[in-house]
Image (tube, rainbow, N blue to C red; front, top):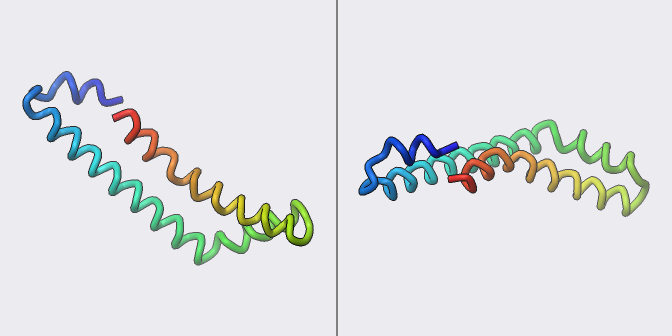
Length: 87
């Protein structure tokens, strides 16, 4: 994904370019996390929680619901994390 960046950038400035891209991708990842948490607080939490409780009853349903929320948060972080790891 970033091979073009390496081929077009002066080798003396490559570290600066990578640092700036890493900062920008990190910032994008934080913005995605914040927007996901805001969506979770406003309308997503009830739907995910009811889905988890529908999978199993009682404490197992609550554990499944908590796992689904954490999994959804992790899934929201994947695209920016993959981009940062390929940098």
